[in-house]
Image 1 (cartoon, rainbow, N blue to C red):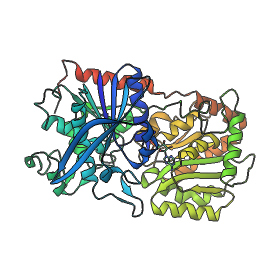
Image 2 (cartoon, rainbow, N blue to C red; image 1 turned 60 degrees about the vertical axis):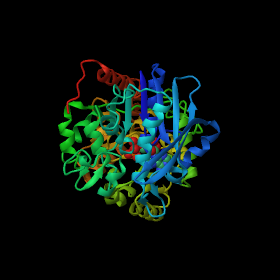
Image 3 (cartoon, protein in one colour; image 1 turned 180 degrees about the horizontal axis):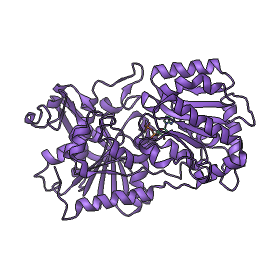
Image 4 (tube, rainbow, N blue to C red; image 1 turned 30 degrees about the vertical axis):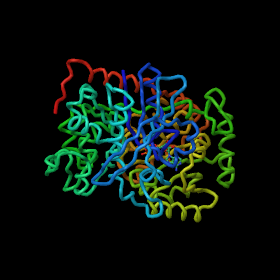
Length: 492
Ligand code: ADP
């Protein structure tokens, strides 16, 4: 089948988080199964590093948004072995910027994110038609590609090129809606009759791209089974629980996979020492190397906790803040890699000062270091308030870096609590979003760490887990096939 993927992030071209990992790996899995796959993404500054591989596509287009006209050009990178092509939608004014979505200096979203992504969504459908790529499925990811299902249903419903195309929205994080002032609606190129209270585009007087995709896409997936249920509740629904509940029958949870070519200690090209369950000496060597990079003292029996994360409230840093002094009173070291909220930058800077031989904070985005932390740490901490899927805990399992997580979303679906009597499980799990529960889990982990034999056994169980993409890709393809079957009728 012909699969069109529209996304704002694709590893290795552009990434701010898990979306980039998923949209890097999943299209490859589709293509490996023989499906003709084209991935559309904006051409950012970050993609310049790959410019030498790009070929210009001969399309010349202009897209008008509320009186402003934007030139569009297009570039392509074709996979040499697979039926897979990346198509870069370019407009330097809109996309050739240091960051993907926000101005780093102010920490605020770019003011013209509406124009940028309206342009991108319109461009995808226009370019696909111009290059005669007739998709059976338009698989769109998050708010940045969320207008495509609406355009297909409202603007292209009579266009034979697209009439049979079904759309699937994947929600990677419901907290990000793509919300803009009501005056942005006129930019969409959609009848203004469709902007009224409770319409698919309207959310408390504003324009909400994600809400539109929830209404207009033929099916909706999110990235774990538990999160698929959670988002239909007030606690996790971010105000969209009502519209999601209306689509309940069409919502499916498909867990993200991991690209083990990139994220496994046997194949990782970013780490100094590869290792495998049968011989873990490389892990110890990576730990020493990491402690040296962090300029922390190497202490043989001291467990090293790693954290790699966006520094946002979602990720449970308020809990860590509450227990920090207690945590550092134990025989433990912590290395954090992350960027985000200023308050957490300050928190970790102050912890680093207070505990110079125990804490190191790398306040930056550094892919190579992320791999080194996965390989070098003993324990991975991820006490999220909510977590659609979470990738780092899954990476951690493969590196024998035992995760401590909260039982929520994809964390609940991938980390199973260690059972002291049977030795089953692959990590440590706490339930309530309370710092005392987090602390108890950390204590439990530290205690087990001192029993080397049991700990090594736990590491081996974790490393044996398999979250490769194939299973998830199969589920997506089954879903696509069900959409394309004659019996399918959308239940709007
Ligand atoms: P989210 O998408 O919510 O940020 P995930 O756990 O799903 O969280 O994915 C995060 C991805 O981003 C992982 O691949 C992780 O390694 C990476 N990442 C997060 N912060 C950093 C950072 N500061 N430097 C390098 N990689 C990071």
